[in-house]
Length: 201
Image 1 (spheres, rainbow, N blue to C red):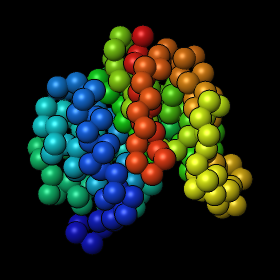
Image 2: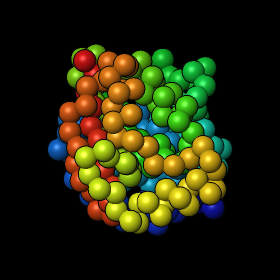
Image 3: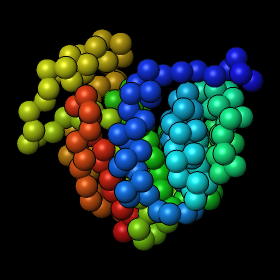
Image 4: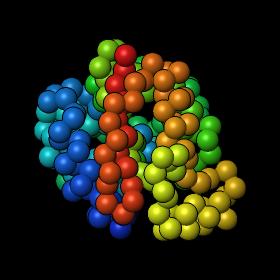
């Protein structure tokens, strides 16, 4: 399976700062679902760093699942097998309940319907009350000037697919609220990214 492993330059850069936030807010133990795990490198690093968590990576893409499974060969026993999950297809959603759900860099590289599906999923599978939803990536904010690099990134995303692009933090918060998720914390991250935290209420 070693040849199935993918690597991500962004994962290499952002793993440490993301982990610092997650370790401060994740539960000490219990099941965690990662949505859109991509290469699976975050799943490997975070399960190693937080051994009390049973970390399940997921993705709709077969190559990503193969990569996550290949990285799992080097992983700790609390790194679960990756599962196929498409946030826009409820038939793929797990029946289990999770203490936390983590998703990085999906919201801007997918149609808005994927964000809506992600938040519906979180409202369904997170432990109620108190389950944690952690979202990482770039956002547009009504009360914060957008960095020039993020504006350029937004334009490049829309050139690749008009349905993609940076989302309004306020729009994400509004949809989350409709799913019983309270917005609790905004953490500025390197390279003009944010970590947004929500709790199931």
